[in-house]
Length: 281
Image (cartoon, rainbow, N blue to C red; front, top):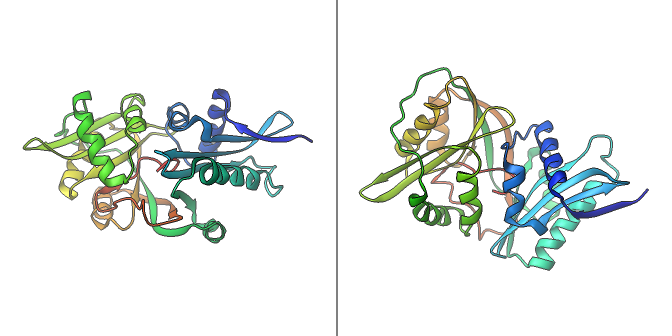
């Protein structure tokens, strides 16, 4: 049987994200179009006799920081090396071809030791919380507009540690997201979006100076999501973020480890109340 690893086509990207939905990742409905645009050369599939059997996203930002996601092997083809092959291919791409300084990923807890062997260390845990919006909230924050984006890109750079403005712009404006922003005295204090997913909506990124700003942003989004199942993925070192989701009555769900090969690009969790996506950070 012939097995090859190559760049994802557009149709294969859609298939890969469908696989991610079946695995419980619940990606955004438009993520399959937006994520590969970060680094089209860094999205790979393993194909066996014309059938997609494995996938991996290995994108980079500015040639400095890489992120791995969508590492999936189709059930029935697991344990046969098709996942390991695409994994090694993605790592080789980021380290040898791009030459990144550091790589991050969000890995399932059960695979922590496996990722350790590949040089990743656990920085913190990210936990998904869910909430069927059954209360009426007040919208106190305006939606994000194009004129806000330079401030948003600068804020995100200080939190994420590397420029991802191009991706973030598409993520906000091309994902049919609900959005919210807080300014005070002309200074940006926080931003948030909730994008439609395979199931319900997912809030993230949610970046804020403090819990009160985060609360205003979250409640402004929930005001537009009455009756919707809503998810938010919180870095556990941010204790105010955990307090906020608990106060809103959200239920704890799947957890992953945020892991890095170095400490240089550890995201600022003090202002991260929800990550953007577990696929590309």
